[in-house]
Length: 197
Image (cartoon, rainbow, N blue to C red; front, side, top):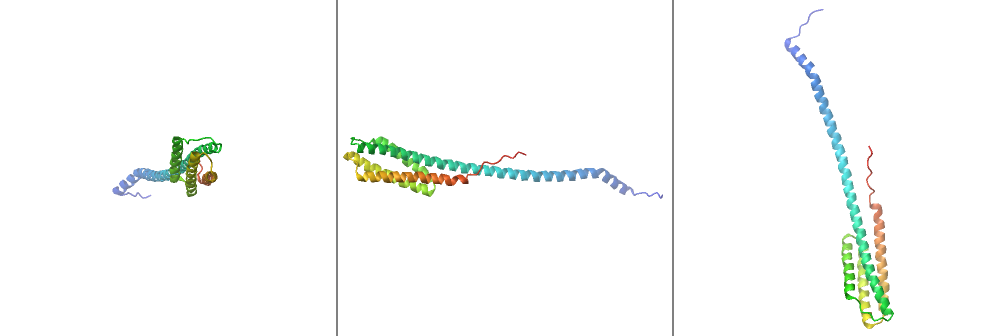
């Protein structure tokens, strides 16, 4: 076999390649793994961000839903309190009892109704807002008529008509609020599922 001698420069290059190839291969493999991990991390981070965004959106929707329910409850409770007082006043007038309406109590009840109605205007469905306005107008008119009846000492037919009208609009307010709450229930998203893997 002939003895082939390589030039020295070629032997040096081959030796450097033989020694450096594993290091270069390890560096390339490490770079590819790092890139793959960065891509996986970015994908996981985006998934996590999307989940957090959905949870924050759900929390905002639930908070608005709860605020709306509370606003409806407050206006209905305040209007109920005023209607109860007016019903007792009506009963006393109809019974022939001399009645002096409690101005301070009336002012407190009317203020509570107006305050609750102001919140309803901010968060309510337009139908509930309209029903709330109508109920407040009717109850306020009924209050004025009852105060006149208390001064006269007798219940008039006008007072009876206002009683029926304010009772009807109050019931319409309740029904409108219930319909609105029922219509919102399907829109409330389900709680997020927790991944188990």
